[in-house]
Image (tube, rainbow, N blue to C red; front, side):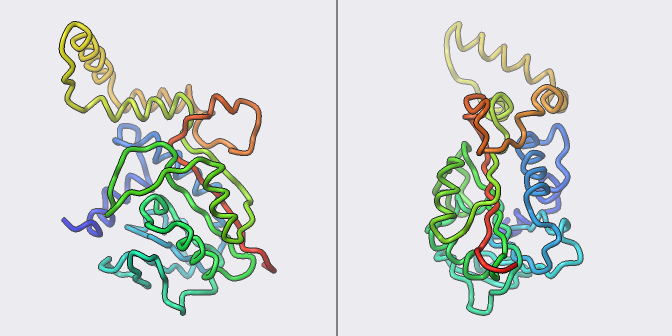
Amino acid sequence: MELSEILAADEYVRQRLRPRPGDPDYLCLIDLLDAVRAMAPLDAERVLDFGCGGSPYRSLFRGKEYHRADLAGGADLDFEYGVDSRLPPNAQGYDFVLSSQVLEHVADPAFYLAECFRVLKPGGRLLVTTHGTFWDHACPHDYWRWTAYGLRKAIEAQGFVTLQSRKITTGARAALFLFEQRLDAPFERAGLEGRALAALFSLIRRFGAERRHRLADTVLAEERVVNAEGEGEAARHALYIGVGVLAQKPGAE
């Protein structure tokens, strides 16, 4: 199956727009959905989904003018671009640009963000979400990881003003998410230690992903979407799966 078909598959989109406890990536995808809903200007009239994939969040902007841009070869695109991320000159005048889980796959993030700046009208807003801590996942390539401060700095370097900065899936919730990715992998360590760890993993698997996720939603609710600018318990949120920045192009709204 082609990459564009995978990203547009009903189940792929469903897990991002309607994640359910028990889904493989539930802990980070439900938090990402909450972050997008909280940070994106859902009343924007003209929206560009830049690096759209299957456009899982398109229904949040129902009734708006919604354009889709991605690498050449995708289905039903309004704009195609190459590895340089250069959009055509007529892509412009947008109220909002959505860039969700794209920037880590962009060869030249500075140029990509400059294109986001160019296509927005003065006062327009950009929401970038990307990975803080995550495994390699080529789509078709995987280049970068970001700290909350580093992402903000890269966006502001292109002329934007930061409005909000968030860490997504933090602390113990992030650790649980990363641990779950190891649960289903073959366990090959030999000796008594290896057998003990294999038995522990087997016990946790029997507890069940859905039960783990429901418990995490109750016990670790404060580690889902966190203000990256807060001082307070910074060490508690030093580990995070995702990061999001809402920024604005200066000028009249």
